[in-house]
Length: 134
Image 1 (cartoon, rainbow, N blue to C red):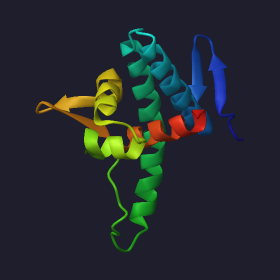
Image 2: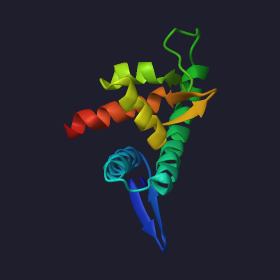
Image 3: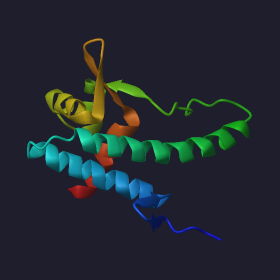
Image 4: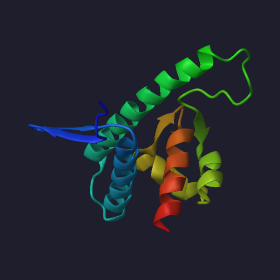
């Protein structure tokens, strides 16, 4: 029996499949809007990270199966977390370096050794969300 992508229980909602990706997109859009309006987004970042982790856990499981079946390691293999700097993020997003630093400060990145580091997957998702909302 196939489970629906969205299920609700007393005090809880279970998301899976495309519903996780949709929720991530919507929470990301909400965070951007809240940040633009000066609303603190720290609580929302925790929700976004939890959704991302749940979605990536399922993807990693699928990756393990596909990697185990590969006979060689191609150049397209990437780790789940691919750190990039703000210059690379600016190129991907088509934004200024300062705008990417602001996004990193708003929760898309973290400080490492005095520099902002972002996850390539989150930046690509942000670029897709911006493209869809445009």
